[in-house]
Length: 434
Ligand code: UD1
Ligand code: MG
Image 1: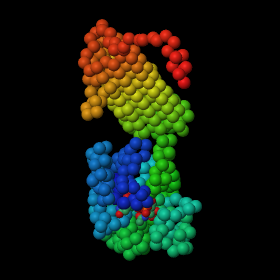
Image 2: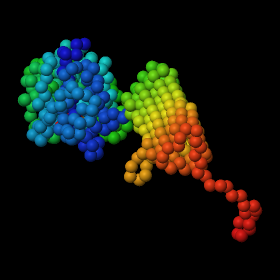
Image 3: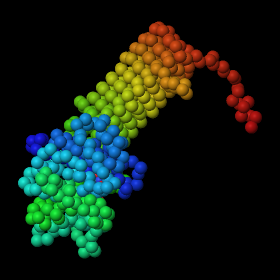
Image 4: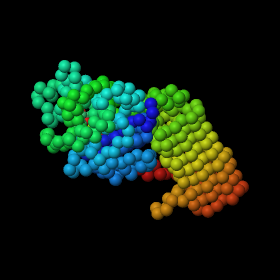
């Protein structure tokens, strides 16, 4: 399909009051990205002319989408004077002969399904599905096999409310239809809004054929509530994980794994049960063991966990990180940190062993400081490394040492533990007192 033949308009100006949230509906996150992100991404695969209509919290919506896309036309709806989905279309400038109108609250839409709207030659193609419980949707009134009009829930008669064919809310229009009928829309309905759906009955009255297209409910279901949001996230998770497994990632009990859109895997990777991998994490030829969390980090030729936590901007290569190790904004190359450590704002070089319970004390209550650890350093268990600190190559730190800020030079041993006292029979005297 030629990208230049179709324009796309995404309606994203509504309040989304059913979400019961101070945040704009389309900015709620699904698998780490705002739901509007997904529909813009899919739209850009289909068209070079993508407009997004905004009004409610427009600055926040524009700012967050501008982080991902630089070629979107943002159109501002005059929501005060022209509220409703029809009002949203008023200021839109369409470049091509056909236009697909999408809703910003449909993050699960796929390109293949949207392509079908253009395979049909018709001035109006509208999406329909059948629901046992059609509540909340516009009902599609069909007579003699022809779509006559759409009645919104709040305007419907008792008879019309029983209709189970509903408007999924996605349409393909010829440009001339939009140009002719949008200016003619009226707001004499229960919500006093300008309904895009009224274009259907107006065009029909002028003898224009409306082509219904049956669509998949799960994919075209709008997100209107927080329950819908979590349902959509479950479906999106399945998609992300299935596609990763198809491309070669091994997952144990995938239903217990959470991986955000944007995480990338290369080579042979294993992800065990209960892991959470978020942001723009990149995992290359690595084994992520059970219940580990990786946030916005790179892991290459390494094994992590079980129960490890890599916080943002960690970069591991040829490294082993074990149980209860937390790493933040640190680069570890050829390192072993097997147990119970916190390594923050640090770089650690090849051949270095971080003993159990080692803590980089990177924060003095006001500022954060760096720790630099060279090659082949042996840091004994239960040591505190108070930053700013450099341990040069070939340094030893005795177990239980507190290394204060400064530099330990190559070849040196740092030891701060006090001399051991052994007091004979102390135990028996102590408990005899009781
Ligand atoms: C709309 C349809 C309904 C259909 C349903 C499918 C109308 C009048 N009704 O109802 O027939 O069954 O979608 O999901 O079109 N929006 C704006 N500006 C506004 C109002 C809404 O841009 O002034 C945007 C919203 O951000 C949203 C989309 O339009 O992305 C749909 O709005 P929503 O309020 O969810 O419409 P529904 O009541 O669900
Ligand atoms: Mg809706």
